[in-house]
Image (tube, rainbow over all chains, first blue to last red):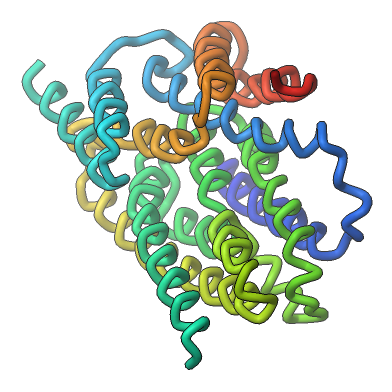
Length: 102
Length: 222
């Protein structure tokens, strides 16, 4: 089985187990305020890290290219409260244009 | 249909459609990361949790191992367990129904359900199921469209997909950056992950930033 398949099936299995556990465990076991606080912060750290790595690195090296321009435009779009698809498309357009003409 | 239910239904369906549209970005991201159309669609059908799905394709697309991808995705999936904890006493379901309820326990179904709290338990249930099924339907339809579209495009860089993927992540994290505290955490995570990238193998720099979340969350916020 390829690594991709392991990733797809493993992620799916654990995702379901986590969801199902929530529905099956009595509430009193999981209400530690520190755990709850950390849990809301984990997505912020991981998603931000993904943005950084996908924008500024390639194959384990630091690289500045058209992606950075695209993500900067996305950042501006978000600041202007643009809808999600405008954010994504404006990033793609910027990056594609620079890639084509650089 | 009563008046109460109509308000809940409208909210559920508009959330379902808008969030479902994100599926296009995910479908395209899966293909750009080197996953097949089938694998990308299975992630939406089986994992069915946007942030986790983006994480596995993001980490593995950047050359990370399956293990670090699964670990990152699973850390992001913990919150669904907490949503289940919140929803279980509202839904009171067993057996096959509980399995289905678990699968559609995500940010949106829980969010809409909690939003109906003032309207009573019945409206909460209604909001949960309608939003859960609604997002499931649209998310999967749009994943297929995004994957097919990206497949037809060929070279991801020529179409800007290489920037669309991090922009899609940015759009996911943006609403969570409520104050200085959250923004500091986000900036620290970006810096740490980039700094570690040339040093440790792909995928690990991302999951390492979970430690930052632990450090930031350990103390009570000022």
